[in-house]
Amino acid sequence: MNLNRRNWLKNSLMMSAGAVAAPSLLSTNAYCEPWLDAPEMMPTLPPKGGVMKARLSANENPYGPSPKALKAISEAASDGFLYPFSYAGQLQKMIAEQEGVQPEQILLAPGSGSLLTAAAIHYSHIKPGGSIISADPTYESLMRAAVQHGAKWEKVPLTANDYDHNLAEMEKRVGDNTSLMYVNNPNNPTGVTIDPVALRAFVDRVSAKKPVFVDEAYIHYTSDPKKFTVIENVKKGQDVLVARTFSKIYGMAGLRLGYLVGQPDTLKAISKWGGGPGGLTMTTLRAALACYQDDEFIKYSLSKGLEAREFLYQTLKTNGYTYLPSGTNFVLFPIRMKGEDFVSRMMDQGVSIRQWKFDGQYWCRVSLGTMPQMQAFAEGLKVIS
Image (cartoon, rainbow, N blue to C red; front, side):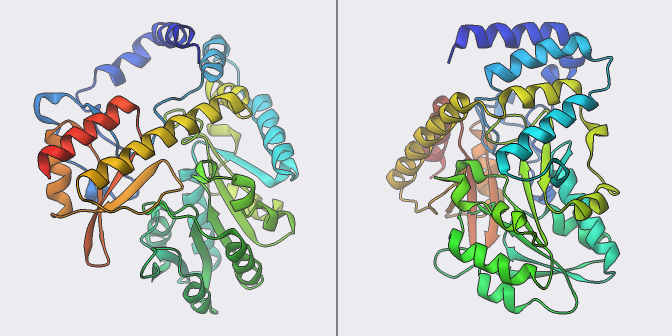
């Protein structure tokens, strides 16, 4: 990677952004995280001395946006007075060609989170009082939104030993009152990836009865995304939705872009509650067009993530911790104190992480950062262990 060029692009972009960029750069709340999936777990205090050494709590890609995306953003800034609809159409077509579907089977939105919310509202309204089935724990955004709109949430515990989706039990729960089946693969917060053969067969059966929503936010971190995705089920015409995001491997979490892959009529119905090109910016779309097929950057991000993950595995072993093998850009491991205390003490070391409690155990989730950030985590863990 041409780091000098990358730094120049970053600097020129911040200078051109001027007053828009300054508040976010100077904010005393810059250490805060997007806690929309579990706000009660948010660290409430800044690190001692106000210095954040490692932000490892939001599963961001510290190597993005790519140089190509940064260049596109800089070039697109001067076109900010134009509506970007034509670029939305270009991106929709590009994604459709890559995935082997039709453009009308792609619904864009400012982040996949808004699409999860739109789907939650849609399915809550077409079946008032219906239930949404999901694993537990998993990413909760869709279900939380659905509950706010009157839906019920049926939580199915993960399997006992490997903390995978219990597909057999989830399928048993499907009934007349089911509105939607939600699957997060790879799963957040565990990082576990479902066997692709078992998942596709599960989707085959369940989608014949009820709609299935598969959230693939971390699919690019698996060993073979085409092997693990269920977009093939969409291509069969099944009642399946697949969510993707530019927030992870593409490093565009702050630029906000995601999309759904599904049947045209379903996407049209969901778009009434959210989604579509109207909320997307010129800079975001141009960045996405520049980096969507940037294989060089994707390989670079994956290689750096693998380096960080192996370092983290070794760090945990050295300090006497076990962990769940991860197919994502984060790792979950059981801890030996209350989660709130662990988060607080790590924050005192300038490291932000996340905590969960399930299966009678407190857990810590650590995002994969740069090697200096991972070293900061290792030093903090050594202090508090």
